[in-house]
Image (cartoon, rainbow, N blue to C red; front, side, top):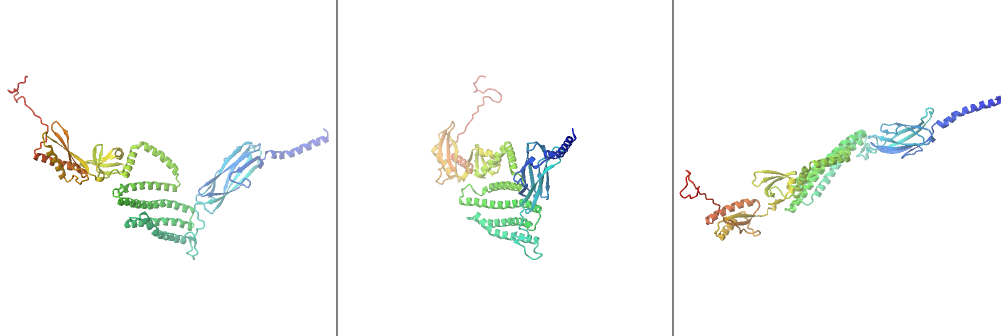
Length: 533
């Protein structure tokens, strides 16, 4: 090789050596062209996202990365926030992305529960992409900026140091202080609503009972509602006062949670008072309009019990909801528990619902005589799960489950206190003057004070009902005033007929037994005994 050729070769090597670094950088260094990245609900060109999030809530964006190079890319995420009210609570995990592959991750930003409603916060997420090859130290970084505006439930803007939250406090010092504005606002709200309640509550009471108003009951209701509404308004006004004085959102939230419980309890008491008053008015109205109506004041305990159950369930649900308890999950769990209880306590539930049916339909009431399974009972008290009876003789107390009572065929012997037909039987000897016996029996019945002789019901009657071996069976029929009078009147009439039969020589036959003694005490036969031994 001559000197000229050697020189050209050396220059070529030097030039190639100078190009190698540039070629390596071009082939190994990571650039924006090696991958595609996009963000849902955002601008993928400026990488600036404006979002509004409620305090105590969060929002999620999906980040997509596609490797369109021949390199193995390593992706790393790092958050940066400038205020404790906003935090990045979820980022995609660091990963290696093969050539031609894609990945999806989630970025979630949360706003503090007590963040100010007028505040704007910034959160930044850095996405760093690099080559897996350790020889390549170059990286590509994208800065995603989230501008977060808080939509706070503690909307205190525009109410600071304003009377009633609307009127500026332009008074001279020291009366221009927020605490003075708060106290005056609370007093004004209480006075305003107290005056309104004095007007509206009497109108409500009259509306509930426009036909037969009970003045004392109405005034009692009005006083009770005023006593309950004033503390309710005070609590509302104090909540607004905390906003007027510029209290911290955490203090506002704490008192708000306590206030919600007090709201539920006070509103429940108000609803209960109105409910009892309205039900009492309605029942009294039915009772006055129709004396024979089955709807009267005796149903008041039933309606009170149902009202207590519904109101208690509503209060518990409302209080739990104020603390963010998932009522749907509780209802599902309660449904499963209720199914188990239903399967295991069918008899108890049957008694309960049977009691509701009896108390609402009222087929009988206390004091009624009922015939159940051919036995007479006197109703003592109807309860939700069972009914108490006494025997006709009033010497026993019988407790019967309501499902047994409702499933039985019941004959109400005293419903509406109608007269009841009663029969008295006598047997006289053959040969008796039946016309005479008829006259005595009917006349005796007519003299009894319990026998109905009003011309609307059948007069006492006589009938020969049977021919027996020992005599003739006679029957006296009459109407007693009530079922309760049947036993006493029958006993009195039997006694008087027996005396009248005896006075008139009418014989009442009875079975006779004749005993002949065939031997004496010594064991010897009598002379008249001709029977062989």
